[in-house]
Image (tube, rainbow, N blue to C red):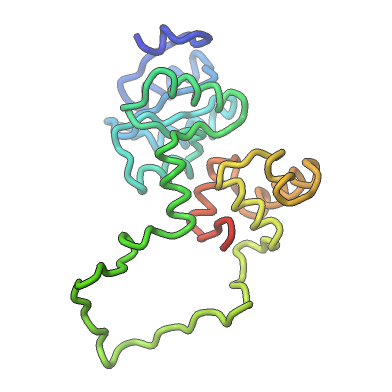
Length: 225
């Protein structure tokens, strides 16, 4: 009922599970599917993967009560371009649908914040920094060898043959910047940014910006790191 009242949106079907969702996508070829995650027979992640593989013209926005990191990144890696929790209002849903229809990622502000926090490192309290007066256990005197951190000024090797510039572009994509904003930040032309994006997409085998964000998170590639 909510979706049917939104301007510019026509609801063509409603599925009870992932298998029915796949059947309805094949029948109606919708522009966007709002996908639940926990469903019988075929869950939302698998249904998303199959929709994107079998019907590349249909985008997927996950709309779920499950906002944990495993659900988020599994959905993005399966091909979802958007991720909203079920407390999203009509305006937020309409914006996410419009974003994915235009080729952008439709991520809620809370999801974007989580991605940025995970890319840039967890907050000090969550990372285990003790508060004043908190007892801290001493490490064992004998234990397995611990790798030394890279020497100052030496950058760790980048995955999949990414160049430093491509990693910079990827980090800025993960920060939510558009091509034009990335070009302005790096003092290059939008055409150059597009070339870098095409190259890094090919090297990392990601299909869209949402998957690029998940890839950046997985490999710890963040703006300024």
